[in-house]
Image (cartoon, rainbow, N blue to C red; front, top):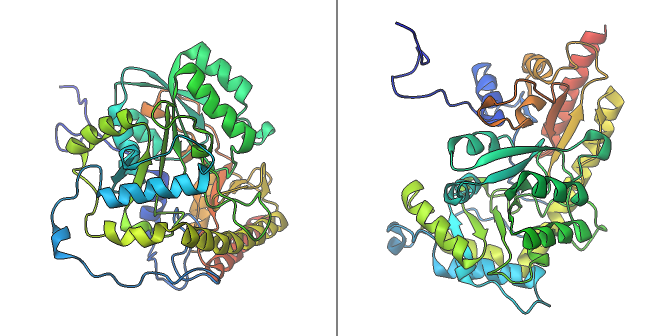
Length: 422
């Protein structure tokens, strides 16, 4: 009898791959890594440091749970939090706009992946464009829902991994794309669509009736503005009518507020989309963490958001510059320096073999107790439809951790490279 399934799996189940970060953390764990291990440096992590930053407001260290919040949350979240999110976006991006977001344009969910999954589950039988390289978790997200067909759009290193609106218009028209999914700023390259380019993207979505699904989880990690008053980027600034423009924005506490463990995110969209993803949430996840939602309200006060973003940008800009300087000195190049996020999309091609391969660089790092994420994980390839893979010569290096961890990890890189050059 022919074996048609993985013999290690219980019959009826398929092999579900791990995302890039989960894969490398699993491999490191087998070698003794723990988050509090004093000798390891996790430069593969997809989370920012969560401690106090100079100039930031006081971090929440304890919460008191209201017994009434032990009940289920509404699928779309508590109304007070939904309105608070709407008010924040109106204050930051829409003060001069007649059309304003309300709680009816907001849905609360249990983290970014849940928010994205709700949106994906609500999509119809369409062609959906996505970009290469981009966030590793998109691969399985684009595979598991069979209603839509994912269409890759390649971003070239020669153009700094920038989205060219003119080229994108041809892709949308030529391939009949009814939705686009992208992270902005981009994980892993750190490149930003902003200003007139972002306006052009929103205008195109409106003109072609193409849903624009934007993962804005790094939208407060922006380094293109002047030092001091923080710069934040969101497509919300360019939406004309909040209930008609097909713009869906997903963000949350994970990155921009540095509370990844809270698992609270939100989606802003036209009311009709919020209703659709609420229906999806009713069978997918059942609603977000209820007790925490009321404690999010003070975190969304505009003055508080501006203060914490200014402190965060100062700290992470310094870490970015430090990491780039160290990498360049080792012979690791960067096609396009990160304008946002807390990642460096490192080009390893100038390193001696086998370190010029991201997977081998990762394996060598384990020997020196440092973690990276190989670039191949960002070649989003749903259902492995393409045989040819990209980004073998790349690695994503995070400057999310504390400075002392960065130094420990970069010192390990130096030892690894020196050993192979010798």
